Structure formats: structure tokens, C-alpha cells
Image 1: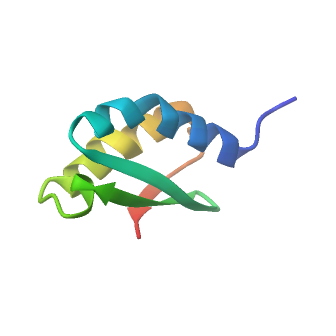
Image 2 (image 1 turned 45 degrees about the horizontal axis):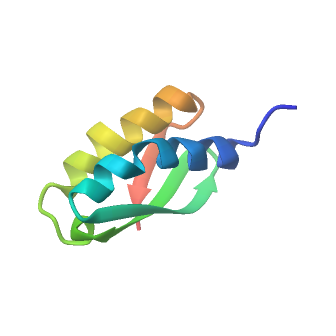
Length: 76
């Protein structure tokens, strides 16, 4: 059985969560809408000036490597 896109995205987030938590932050899955994933950055990530770099170069890149049908990751 093939896992749903949402389950694969959640697993991808679990994979990278330890690195994010090492800096005092975290990421929560809010929704998967078509080819867009919406996440909430919490902890230090919520107010970090580097959060957009973390979002695009870290979180989005990893999710796209695991779930290629995802085209965009947005913070909400």
C-alpha cells in the first residue's frame, strides 16, 4: 500500500526535526493542499531572521527529495 502524500510529508518532517530542535525551534505540519505544504515554525524558528532560509533550503528541499510531487512549502 502506498502511503498518502500527507503521511510521507509528516515522515520527512520527522527526519529533519532533530536538526531544527537543536537550535531551539520546531516545525509543525498545518496542511497539504495540492502540491503545497503549509507548516508552522515554532520556538526560536518563529522569530529567527534566518527562518526563510531554513524553510526553503532545509525543510522544502528535504520534503521535495522525499515527496517529489510537492512543489512549494510555505510558513503560515
